[in-house]
Length: 296
Image 1 (cartoon, rainbow, N blue to C red):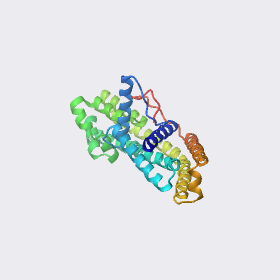
Image 2 (cartoon, rainbow, N blue to C red):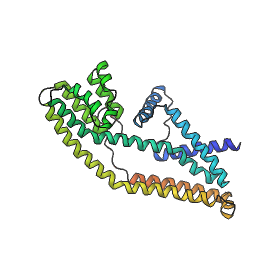
Image 3 (tube, rainbow, N blue to C red):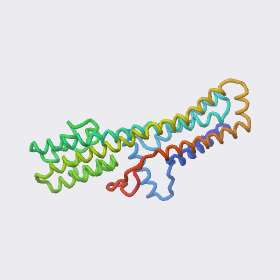
Image 4 (cartoon, rainbow, N blue to C red):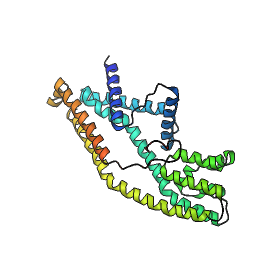
């Protein structure tokens, strides 16, 4: 019964934190919507560089959370003291790979100006745009090599437009959307004006990326502070209850449980509020499968 209660409490805490920060499982009863949601989660994993199913990802996360709950319960001898650190450990894989995903997409975004100049040089040297794109997938910036890794094969099987659209949907980034749309138009129209169009696009993309990086740098300190302020009190509480004494006795009592629950609610709310206030406005996608939904 204790293990069942622990599992139920961990699941409740996971769902509560998920709904607070906006990453809770989106449960649907209709099969068509459920399939769409699974596709979005799989896309998230692909962008993060993981070739596993969403179910396996969250199963591993929950197992890590349960192990952390057992270890922290053994240290503090108080279930409610061990629960918040266990929830944090459960969410760590998601936070880690979300950061990795954003870094990969950011690397691709920053690489587009050099990649476009690479295309301009290839087209001016006599290459066709498809050949220049294949050369970019092999000899371009490393981030674009990874993003365009499947482009040569897809272009030969399905054609250049379908291959570019596949790259656009996998990256799901507004900057990449604009670049791909210009490349599609350039491939369709062709002509000597293509290098000039790509050069102008490289210059405008460079300016956009510089502006975005400045905005992100200004909010970095605020985001780090929010995470530190959230995590430190619970680590201190875990250390305070690691030995027998008045702290462990109090937090194993009903009054201590109430204090922990209230503190957890206030911590989550404070983290959410600071993250919300420090969030930068995200550019919405205009093209692609998720064009009608806000960027994540």
